[in-house]
Image: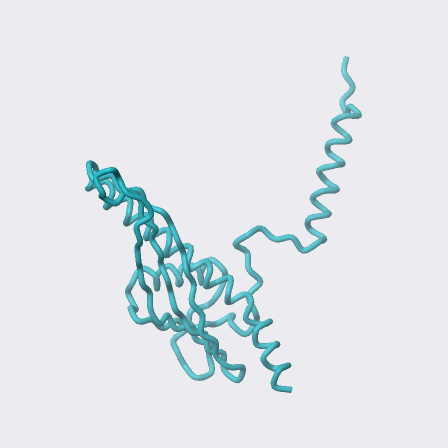
Length: 178
């Protein structure tokens, strides 16, 4: 009859426990869990297109990270989405001189205003490549729409990462003023 606890399984269990404690004690967090400053626990969102897809993506990121979306006022920090643009450039050609591959570039400009601390304007850029096959035009238009939606999602995540760095930015500005 085998022993209930073998040396090998005990060592493996001990190793897993030590690694779990080590990662928990060093402050490791999974990507996507941002330590947002206390100043932006409540945040208003204004946009050039209040019902656009980017605005909805940013609002969903607010909910995901526990930021309460409130109406704009002078005492509440504000995230203002200024503009978005989508550009493309040709990367490669077929033998008949038709475009085979494009690079899509999605750029979002936004402004963050924190009362009594100041405002900062940022822009974020997301690039993707897109293969174009003229024989499957309908499928490619759907694929392109999906790629554009993914680019909006990534841009909204980048905006949240920038919000997580706001404390350091405003502290640096205060030090420069002194």
